[in-house]
Length: 349
Image (cartoon, rainbow, N blue to C red; front, side, top):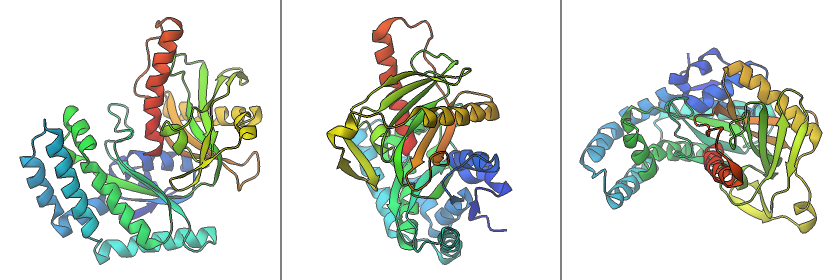
């Protein structure tokens, strides 16, 4: 059995130790019949084999053992050195062959040559209920061809040893070398709009509310804080939209990392209509029931698909922190929404 890559629909993709948190969430949705962007997972066994075969496991252990954990400059220097190691050392043939085959199969299934994909980290410590490494690891969007996929796979692995990721791991009592890195490879969604949905209010902790933040294009503008997204609140039981707040959607990401200005006419319009919001909320409720806890869900509306069939889910993870529902006043709401916006940075990581 190939344990280097696995399709989301395969039973082994439900093993979080094998594929990591993000891929596990996608596999859970795919196998429940919930639409996700097509793709596959590169397993943690591939990561372990790469480190072992290249000798990087020993070099990493030595580098992390001697670095001053309290000195930011030392951590950043260590991270740059490690990143260079991953950049310089390609995948051995035994790992490259199944990766290339999985990418070719994805291209064939979509009837596209060198399909554009996102390459996204999926660590075993990521997106868990106990500790979230949200935003600590890398995501790369708009990549074409197996050479780019292979190179950015290694860059995802290297992001486990960024200064930020190392600091977060040690702060939470986690050995960075004990974190196994899976990676997700998915078709790039050509998003008309995208964002994040909470099946609980991140402002008040109210479980009877679903909160959706969205903007034009890919979700990079929302999660990176480049725009003020439109904000919607849906009544979870009744199913109707009860709040619509127009954001300042002055740019959008149509592909890759390049921002495009949004004209004034579109900026003055909400990026989602009520039918799309209620349909998305139904999916959110289903996922909350499936997981038995409030969920933080990244989604997109694919502009290449017809309305009604255009919702694509990119990520689903438990909400790890909720505010005190007793927090009073608008000032508390504003502070908590700033907190929520920080949490949203996970959606593009």
